Image 1 (tube, rainbow, N blue to C red):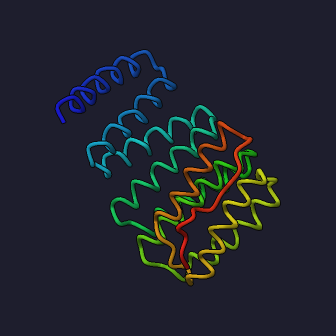
Image 2: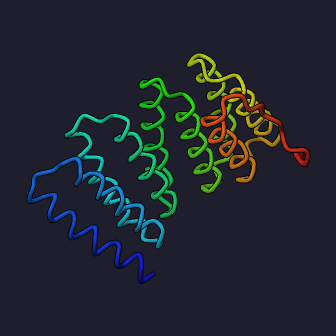
Length: 196
């Protein structure tokens, strides 16, 4: 934990200098980095405060991608604090923004974070409709065909299980989507151990 404390001290010093120089961009990135550090040491409330600060600075800079990224981090931080309704709202706003920006794979990843939040909150009845809606939304957004297959797999599991997915199911699809961004020629294969 000592190294993280050192990092926070360094970020505070750097933020002071950036503030003196009126360097809004650097301040925004420092706040985001401090949020990441606080997340790593489990201080989710402080992390959310830093991400919110960064988001407000990115709004001043008119950087919609960074704003949407901060919303993801805020949403995940809220999940970690058990604030599921607020988390789902933030994640939904981020998902819509990434769709508007023409970034459907990132939007799909955010939707999977929403599914995770619903599973952790035990809101199983919401999972199946969200998965079903993801398919229609992302087909119309021209999401990569293999990404559509991965989301279809998750939708099928949600239907079979009445929304009671396992977090491992969601992680499997999320990991595939992350790899697909770097390797667009990947093919989605459902895990051999999938059980209804």
